[in-house]
Each structure stands twice: as C-alpha cells, then as structure tokens.
Length: 116
View 1 (cartoon, helix red, strand yellow):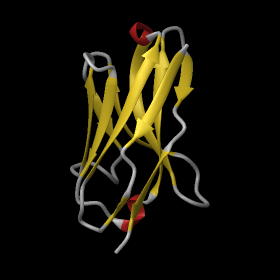
View 2 (cartoon, helix red, strand yellow):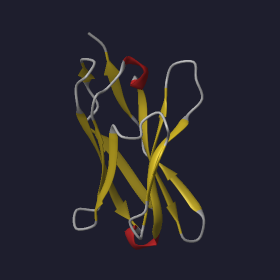
View 3 (cartoon, helix red, strand yellow):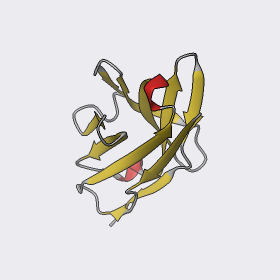
C-alpha cells in the first residue's frame, strides 16, 4: 500500500509560480513511476508530467517548458514546480504512483487557481 498526500495548491495570479508537493508513505520501494494529473471543472482528468524511478521525465505539451517534475528520494516526496501559470492551468492537481506489480495510487488532490 502507498499513501499520497498533496500540498501547495493556492490562488495565484497569471504569470506567477507555485510548487506542489506530494508526500509518499507506505511501500515506497515498490514505486516505479510517479506523476501529476489535473482535472479542471467539467473536464476529464489529464496527464501533466511523470518521472520514472530512473529519473526520466515526460510532460504534456501544454506544460512543457513551464513545469518541472522532480523527486526527492530522501524525503519520499515528489514536486511539481509550475512557472508562468495561465488561467487554463486552473484545476485540481492529483499525485499518482504506479508500483511494481501494477497497482495505482492517487492522492486526494490540491486546488490550483490561476486568476487575477
């Protein structure tokens, strides 16, 4: 079992920055991949970014160049650094973990609102 707890969501102005955190606990060693997804009101949940256990990162085209995903193994935490935020980035952001064998875990979500 893996537990994920997000934090860092807030109201921020367009062009601003924010860092989300996701603290993992439980069977940490079984995590093969971690990621961030987001869901805007009335829309389906969508992929934002991921990082593998070997450090390879992948980004959605909509956030490439603005967002950075990272993982601190010492703190069992993954981060999403978000820069140059736009109103269309407004969503609930969810932390995701994929373990070996293939079990999927989600956090409870943290709200990010980009508005002036």
